[in-house]
Amino acid sequence: GNSVTQMEGPVTLSEEAFLTINCTYTATGYPSLFWYVQYPGEGLQLLLKATKADDKGSNKGFEATYRKETTSFHLEKGSVQVSDSAVYFCALSDLGSARQLTFGSGTQLTVLP
Amino acid sequence: GAVVSQHPSRVICKSGTSVKIECRSLDFQATTMFWYRQFPKQSLMLMATSNEGSKATYEQGVEKDKFLINHASLTLSTLTVTSAHPEDSSFYICSARDPGLTDTQYFGPGTRLTVL
View 1 (cartoon, one colour):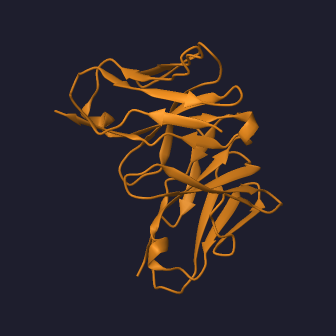
View 2: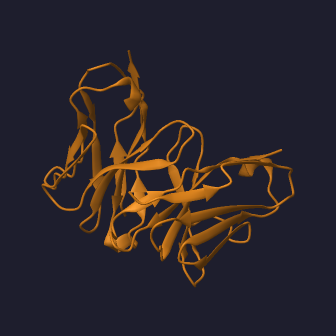
View 3: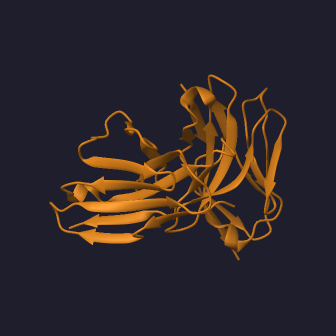
């Protein structure tokens, strides 16, 4: 079956530091890959996505590249801000699973001023 | 981006009562909606897939008689927690899949249910 393995948290960084949150996946078909962000007390917001190999998703300074050879979709940001503090979820969607989302466990990011 | 709303955002009820949560897609028609449950500091657990005009598909271990799902229109799905108990207290989140962008689900803001 499908699965997503995400870097364990929590992650604490200083403002303007470089961020990487690792994500690898296992899928039976050709999945689409997503990063969602959840701020305290809120639902999930789509941060970025990539639908095929070598695609790069980007939004708000965050980037992730769909790497089929390493089955990875690592999230990066060059300079984090305090407002980036949230929980980040990596997820995949596969036609074989009727497009249901399979989520990673989530990574709590705290950015200190 | 697409907007999905949930109502209510918070609800407190007594044990034994039923609670209905609404999920609406505001600017697109969603043939498929999903209901998730999230425990504190944990990931989302898919409860069921709600298909407009047909019965919901429940995940293993989710009681269909306890968590009633109705998807009567292309913009509205409801989750009713029947005979709620304290262990049903949780954060319930819905999502809707935009048929124009079949790989993208948009999430509602969630409903915090507390059963006393």
